[in-house]
Amino acid sequence: MTAQTYDELLEAGRDPKKDRLAAGFVTSLVAMSTGVPPREIAARTRARAEAARARQMAMYLTHVAFAWPMARVAAAFGRDRTTASHACHRIEDLRDDAAFDARLSEMEACLRQAPADTWATA
Image 1: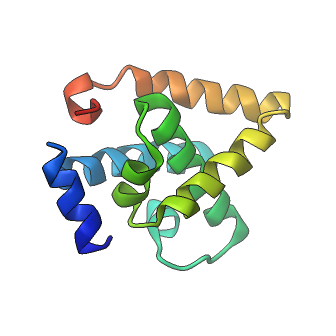
Image 2: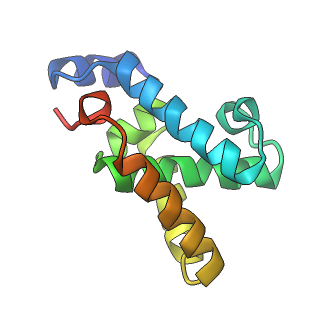
């Protein structure tokens, strides 16, 4: 995350540390669902295709379930806004598959039950 992004989050009244914890929560949920270890999902490298897909799912779910803008999702995952946007588009395209869509919907419903003060938009 760039210093500028961090400063922008602070100016907007958001706590970047809380955002990273929320991203970690989503990453853990995706890890349980996919079987990909959280450390692989959070890794800075592209690694295995399964880990990259799981990371895209985590970013997508954070954007959709928490209604965060792409810049906030990107900052929480230590990525850039275009990477988060690409991830969301890729996952949205995969939702045409009924089984994948059902799995994502279940995770989204789980995330919507999380306490709002953890992730609420500032």
